[in-house]
Image (tube, rainbow, N blue to C red):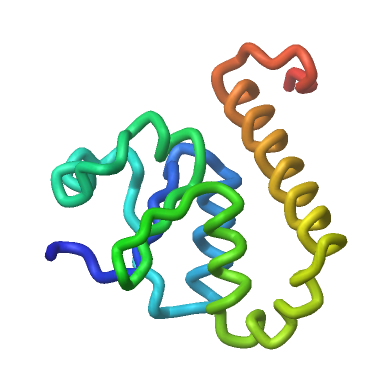
Length: 127
């Protein structure tokens, strides 16, 4: 296998994705990151598609389970050193709603950022 697991696929052209990656690298040196734009990833993991991986963050766990979107956040909350000690605070219905809301807002910001980069966001101020 070419990639060390766990592996997180991210879009290096997305500023929010880059910040997410940088923050995770700071928290856990054992995570491996790869661009979702790298075609070699899909040869190693044929169950993945480039389009899906560019739409949502994906993670391949130690046991080769494929997680996406909020599932990645849930897994990181359980496994990141330091963070996992507080994961129980979100392990109830209210916590689930908080995680869903947070993930939804991050996705909305990512979409606005992508549109701004492409120059077709009517919600973004022009410089």
